[in-house]
Structures are given as C-alpha cells and as structure tokens.
Image 1 (cartoon, one colour):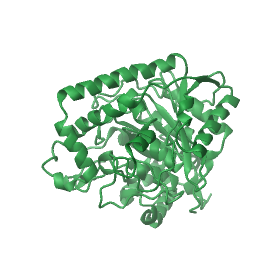
Image 2 (cartoon, rainbow, N blue to C red):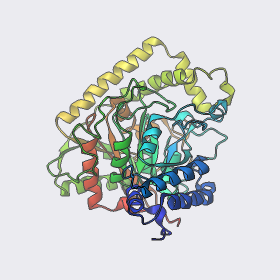
Image 3 (cartoon, rainbow, N blue to C red):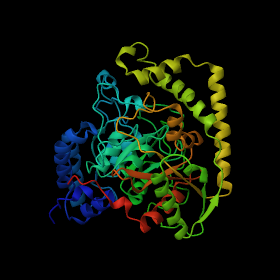
Image 4 (tube, helix red, strand yellow):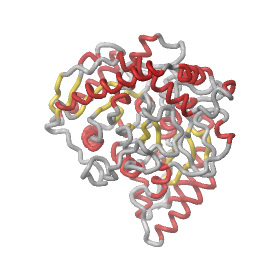
Length: 472
C-alpha cells in the first residue's frame, strides 16, 4: 500500500497499526513527516530542533526489527515530537531559553524519551516552549502559530507541542504542565491532553520549571493515543525521588489495552458557577459536553469547587522558589541573557522568605485535601479550561490582561496542579472565528484510568477530535 497523501492526519495508533501490518514502513512515514516539517515549520514554527538523521536511522532500525518479526508494541515506528525540556543524549536542551543549549549537549536521555524509544517511537525533534516553561517566549523567539486560526492563542507553555500535533507535524507530542501547560495548548489547539497525577510520570532528565508542581504527559488527537503513550511513560524511576513506584499501566490493575468507553452510572460533579463568567458561546459548548455525558448515563452532581484565590496567591511563591533553585547555576550570573518575565520570576524566587514559602506550602496542602474530598461524592469533575477567547501573543504574566482576567483564565488550571490530581482535556467545539474550545475532566489522584474511560465514552459519541485544520 502506498502511503496516503493525508497520512499526517492519522492517529498515532492508526499509524502504528498500519506499520505493523506492512501497509507502509516507518521509514516512509518518517520521511513524509520530515518533508512536511521542512515545508510547514517555517509557517507554524513549532520545532526548535528537527533531528533528521537520527529519526531516519531510528525508523530504519525499527523497520529491520519488524521484518525480523519483532514488534515493540502499538507505537512501533510512529514519529512523535517532544517538548524541548526533555534531554536526548548528545543533543542540546534549550528549555525555551536562548543560551542553556549552548552550554553543552545532554549527557544522557530523559526517562520519558528512553521509554518512548524502547516502545518503538521515532523522535522527530524538539518543540518550542515559552522561556523556562513560564508565561512568555523569549523576546528573540518567533512563537508558534495556531494552525486553526492565526489570530488565536496557542496556549502556554507547551505551545510547540500543541501546534505540531494540531498541524499534522507529529502524530503525538509530549508536553509538561505546571500551571496548565498541557491543558491550555490542548484546548487552544483542539487536542486531547492528559496531565497525570504528580509523580506518576518520572521527571528525570526533564529541565524543571518547578519540580514540586511539574507534570509530563501526552498531547494527542484522541483518547486512545493518550492512553497508549501514558502506558509507556508512566511508572516509577529510581533517578527521580518524587516519582511514584507503581509500574502498572494507568490505575492499579488496569491493562495496557485501549480504555473501555464507559460513563454509565458515573457520578460527575459540576460547579455551575464555572459558567457564569467568561464567554457565553464557549460556556455553552462546555455545557453541551456535560449534556453528552448525561445522555451516556452519567449522573450529574452539583457541587462547589474549593476557593481558588488562596492557591492563586501561593502558586507563584512556590513556583518562583523552585525556579530559582533550578536556575541557580546561571542566575543571576547570566541574568542579562534571560527574557524579562522569567528574569522577574527568578528575582522573586531568590528573595522569597522562608516563612512566606512555608505559608504557601501550607495553603497547597490544605487545598489538596479539600479538593480530594470532592471525590468522596463524585468520580470526576468537569470544568472549562479557557473560559474566554484569547488573541495570539497573550502573555498571562504581562500587561495584556488585568489581574481579574488572568485569574479567570487560570481559574481551572493552577488549582489542579496544586492538588496534584490528574486531568484530561478534550475538544468540544469551535468559536465563530474557528478557534477550538476544550473542557477538562479531573479525578482523584492515580485515577487516570477513570478519566480515560470517560474520555473514550465522550469521543465515541462525538467527533470533535476528528477535525483538523484546513492546511492540507
């Protein structure tokens, strides 16, 4: 079978299945994807580094293995991209800065990339992100462009990951989430993104924004792809002392098979106040998603989310202190090489008092407990991700938004990281200008399997995840 012209819109699992059946080879699909990147990366700009020779060599090796009768699993031969926080031995890691990658190439490969490659994935390259994974791109960087609507925000910080998957420049990507950085670009770019439980996916070899808040997870076109990649990257690693030590895929006792589509009888919580502010059209699309779950047999339970105001005040202090620790070798000694937003955060981190940090951590602990109590009554909570349309170039740490608008945008993102719970983001429609809208499901810690089952049920009843931008 000849590789179809539209192969770049296939899901990761569809590509893996076709390669496994011999319909086309990993080399063919990798060459095709690299050619597409060469053509469109100058337009949409998601890649910071394209690993042409390395990717082709990987694909050839995987084809040889398959011809010998050896398959590494459902991702065998599938080309994906990774956020440029994840180390690859012998390659630079810039982490969104203009200088870190120039200090020397990585001496080992991050755990998540090791696991993906062991499962047969081909790494196409490293994707752009905001500087240090904070709120804005370095002033010298040309940021990625949303392929759905160039006037719309791409989300942060995993902007390159979101754009590459949405534009058909990778079959899936890895992102990271500290305050919403998987969910914001997934919602902005019409993707399915999973922020796992904190510690579920090891962070060894991933340059940190905040080690106590960071999460790494998949950004894909559908729930099945999300589950397949999560199965590969989840599990404890001795090199990351914060990683959890269950190596079972997804929840304890779950299998590595695609998630069962099941919403019947599930108690799903919703805080109606979540739809009282923000854009009416976007709120209506999220409410329509809630109605789909009701039709699928879920019981909708009214509840009140814990007040996020204390966490919104605590998050910057915790994050800033962690960032200062992560950049201790280069800040303030190379302060003039940082952009203004990350430099400002580092200055805060180097000046925050021990008492203020202790108070912020106490707020986090209390909030996590209060959030966890929600799941004594429900199995999942549904909320918006981004409640208002945002223009391209929006800087949540800059002056474009008032403090009230900034809090509104982060209202459903920061708290979930502070609670360390898993969240699954999925598309649920489009605004009038063609910008995607997403919602998130949040569950108790370690209950990723429940989220994936609910996501599979939703995507079995809708087709928003099958849409793609009209760019060929």
